[in-house]
Length: 161
Image 1: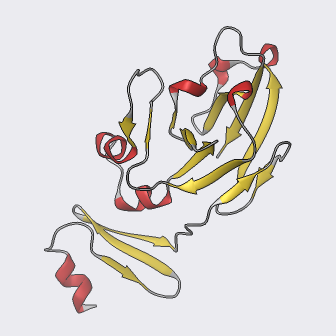
Image 2: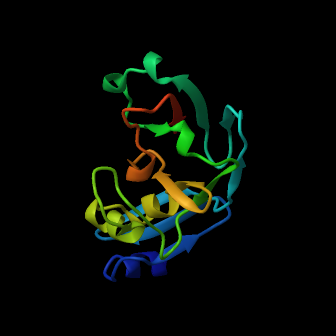
């Protein structure tokens, strides 16, 4: 407990762990979370969901049946033809970069986190969808511009976090 109280006057990043929880000093807060699993998961062609590290659903639809205006914030709409299976879901790693939707140049994932004021816990929990060693999206956050739907897209791969 003394170490926790001392951390209140220290800089961000101090971490505390017990058998059930993870706590971190982030800016002017102490954030408590259940343990964060850092496992990678393979997603095979035709697979409709995974349950770990979190529930993620995968659906394929014809472009004509999808309404982009009704897209939910936790959904990623991906051009199916641009994906190479199996896909990989993994935590972000230092040095990871992608081209955020609407941009033309690469941005480091760590810079994206800073720009969007991610807490230390949110950073640790962030997962990436990978196709052929290329980041497709930050799940639930931002699509890579190279995987966006375009005029000649035929199938939409919807990933729901």
